[in-house]
Length: 212
Image (tube, rainbow, N blue to C red; front, side, top):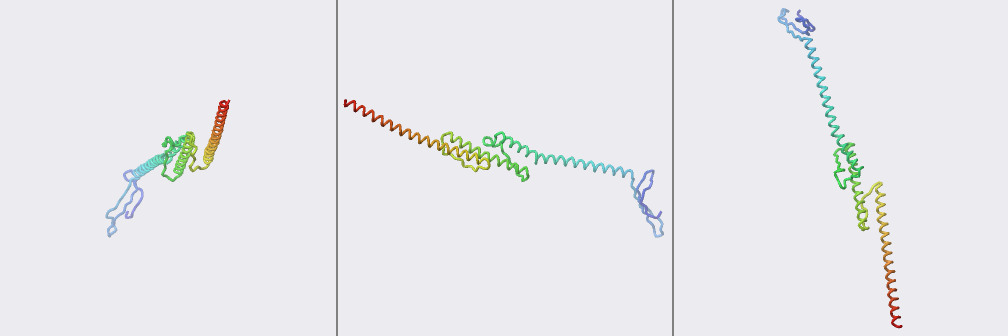
């Protein structure tokens, strides 16, 4: 035929998708034909193989993405959370970092919720170190007999009550010691008076005996 054709054709017992274009001369006679064909069965197999390959690559990418996400979550969330939990347990057990600073060592450069929790817990540990450290110092100083000591830290919240109680104890002890000193001075004065009276009485008795 002298017309273009596109469609299926049976060639050597196999189905091809073909397209050909006859080239005509001036008389309208066919000089030659441009022909192209593609085996449908082989193309289908190649297409199926490509689809399987695409699905496999997609699945591999999904698996790798999940693994990467787990690693990132472990780095960003799990490890900092475990560290924060460890610090909280140390504080619960009475380790506030005075004797062992590493027990409450915590640092975070992030501004997310985990970073805010880390910062708050670190500030809590620092405040406890200040409070407990000063309370321990004041009580130790009192035990040595020095009642001139006083609290100077900036106590907040419920710790204000502890500061007030500690200051009251120091004030009460100073008042008691002042009364004891006053009583000691009075006792010493009375003893001196008694001693003087005794000496005067003894001297008078001696003079009376000499006269007799």
